[in-house]
Image (tube, rainbow, N blue to C red):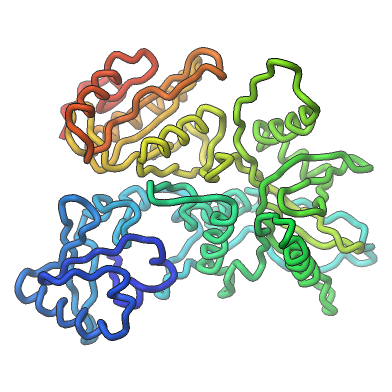
Length: 483
């Protein structure tokens, strides 16, 4: 059970999060808790609340939620009330997602440490012994995610990227948030500080370019040069490597079958050999093809051309330096995301869904997986604090996009998941997109639980008659009595 002391409520991880606590009639917010003179008042109020009421109250939602008041080593601490972490606003310091315990990428390979950091084991190393007689121009051996299958607890590039995205909350959204690449970079940097590898923060091995600005170009170039210089071969014969995260803009050909990755915000491309490119082509075929097609379509479009906004592609690269001061990727993974807020999005329909959710002022999250869709044990999307199909408030609803003509095994697996969620009191909104891509619109979404009831009933009515969406408890193939 997570607890909160005064220091935890005011540290960096709490910045931008909601803090509004009623303790024995006294209200404490972030400003008051950040005042050193309020330390004793905070402890006295907790002592009073524990003796008089047995709890404090969090005001993040319209109906206050109870908080435990615990005494440990002579100091009072606040803790989430059992089984109620998911009822809090998702921007609240006390929010705990009920799905975190089963989300694969948030638990695999990670060990939560008492100081709030998360220790991980990696399937690759940041150091390797230089090959005897190797020249500086020799391309490094490619490492492939999943290469060391005998140690499933170790993270490869794919699962490490998922962990970083989840730890940085880049797979979540709240109506009070704003996000661009600068904000995403900041959150990733904070997350990499909290993740440790062999006792060292992951941030020591990582470079995330700041957004390119003409007036800050020299500073960006110097930061890149420092990262490259730090990867120079040490005198002990060890070749050092690091990680780089950036949006991938285009790919061009080099001699000998190698490729150059041109990432946004950096002026120098990053090389990959034919083996790495082949791995991406086999395992990330759709986002890779999208980048290649964008490179081919850079020429002016014909008259009447209508662009459909495509996902942005994030490159996660395990890189080494070359003898000429450049960078080569030993291994790579790419992930498609929404082009503005960087929430993972596999296709244009998911882009549309994210746009509709943001425009509708929803709190939502995208679960990240390493497993294929038919093996997943959680929904792709979670919507928070909405009305169920019967107009009753629920803390969670599942969202799904079900492609037309999907394989029966996939449809069966998603139906079984919907039936299992119904047993937990979680309804499912399932959209089957139809028609031309440029004409598609997201069907009505479940109404928010704090809106006008008449408008909410009208929205639920439109959902019931819409041909492309199904909102219910379960898949419709079984009878479910909502809890």
